[in-house]
Image (cartoon, rainbow over all chains, first blue to last red; front, side, top):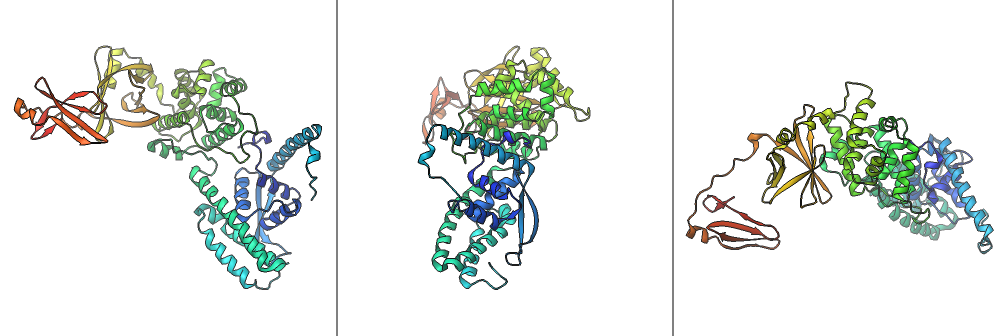
Length: 121
Length: 411
């Protein structure tokens, strides 16, 4: 298995947002979706197919792990699957964000950032 | 927030329709994710409905249908391309025999293939080729194949750099972010088929060592070129891998190499025989003192040129053949390479071949009755008389003499 964050190709957007949503603790599918939608101010709405497709890929690459099946106290009584970031996932995410940050820094240096409206959650 | 109260009718109806739609997903995916997907959709529907009523629900359906239509083909693509969950390479290019072996590959080989696929993505290449297979091999330092290469004096890092230089990279960002290549190039397909043959000969599961032998046998891909620059060839690789194996019981086959060191005349005799490509297409290998000949059913005779141990090319056509031996050194069959296709042909035991038909002499007048054009496109041939002998010419082939063996039957 790839043990190194360097060995991963750039993360697709949906996957990156899922990792970001899981960064501060475990969540179930619906909570991930709400989180991503809220954090991106509604720009990214993950449908069930996209979300679980990406979750399947991430599970396969061991970037996230399924933690447990339990009830969400804030929602109805059904049991839900919870996911959390793995150690590898955290490293891959931070490597990815660092590389994006360097792109942003380059953009600033070239003074093209002004044309892009600031994105605030 | 949703409490324990039942959902409104529109939400329950939407859920049922979505549940029904989910039946189109591949079985394995559905078993794992259909329930949470349905749950998620239902929660979305309930929230949207309570916030913005029927209009909101219609909007949700609009988005969901788009999402559904995008993810359905993706999941099918994933299913088709995966042999096991850990590796995702399309095996469509392998011969059917090899596919069975391929499905029983070791964990090491699976990781290697998954890594090869990542390498091709990383370098921005459109498909998995031999160089990616080699990079995939080198990635795992503890594998038997990498250890063998290190023992032969190679530094994995140097080889990696050389491969990347040779293969070239497509600069990052020229491919769309969702781009992943799962398909094998023709050469990589040939390599893996050869690797499968190696595994089959040893009656073991496909492992990294077999892939290394496959790469060396394939002989003209980037991987083989780089390896030969570093002085690794098939003979050396085989000898080394024999040492790299830990247990002597699970030995590597081709000490068989010693069988190819016979005097040429005796060596050629071992190849002589008939190889069955299909019931109606048999390749006959014959030899005189220092030359090997091959003749396929209804095809002209070709002389053969030695490429490497047990590997020959047909002079005049771009086809190649590689003979396979069992542990006792007996030829069991041959792999024929033709237009990028690989086909395995078992060697027939002497009695298995249909006996040569016996010729019945024809009179000139009888023969003349058969002369003329026969068939229609795409299968067309002309029968002519040549010096009292009937001959047949197929569209693009040379004239072949035919002999009568029964009433209206020729060979």
